[in-house]
Image (tube, rainbow, N blue to C red; front, side):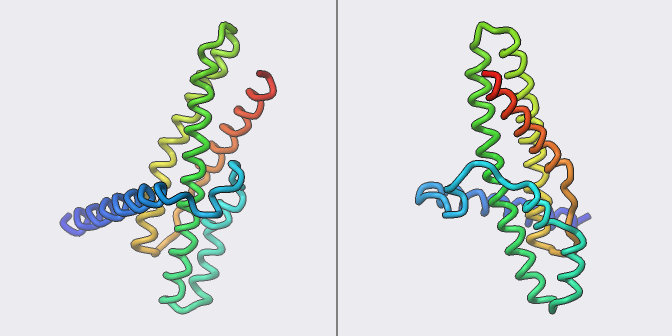
Length: 165
């Protein structure tokens, strides 16, 4: 019980530390790989967290190098999650503006977009938690298939919404 509590405290500390670093970096400007474009490639994200690759690398390189390499992959995945969060915020904001429309169909679709975006935001919190835990203890790579599916659905709904309005 005590070890679980200590592990949870360490994970919370790392999440807070990473949030503070992200906030400080936001004042200086975003890293170059987050400045260009707004769409992330879900396949690349899924490739970063591919279990088969994880097992192959774990068997192929020394333990110390594996942990270092895995933490780099997790940092990149976390920065991609930050881009997804920014995209989700943008969609929520635009859909909120679309809710002011007099067209009932537009308002309904805007509400659906907001619902999907909020669902994805909740999934992002879970994904960040698992990735931070993996950064601390790179023992086994988690699978995040629901994240990829939800992001694809949200982005598809958003592009259809843009085409209509």
